[in-house]
Length: 124
Image 1 (cartoon, rainbow, N blue to C red):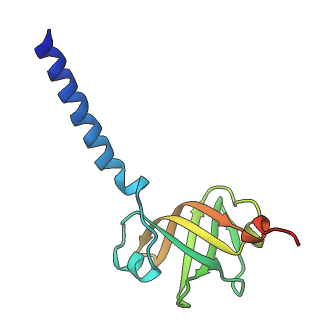
Image 2: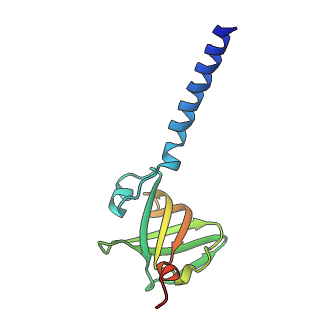
Image 3: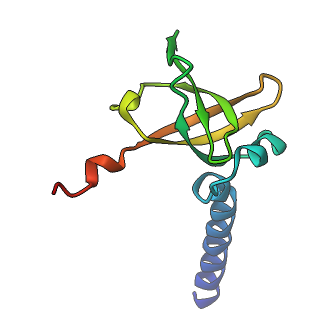
């Protein structure tokens, strides 16, 4: 009976380790600069930038298409299948989680999160 419990515990622990390593790309994806996302196409990462207001945001066939600019002034085109986040046009920063597609030269975001610091500032 004790031997059986040890084997079950070992198998369970092994499955847990496998699950953590297989999900680590999705859960633990780091913020990376645009150039790093471009140099590692297909790798799941997070990027952050501000919405490029010189290029209009497009909604076409269930896909949100827009451009962002990083701190260094680099531009990156982004597509996102899904709903446009609330306050998207009013956001100061956008966080995109996904993969860079080198064949299309575009970042394909699975998730788009908006950051609006002015919403959380104290009113004087």
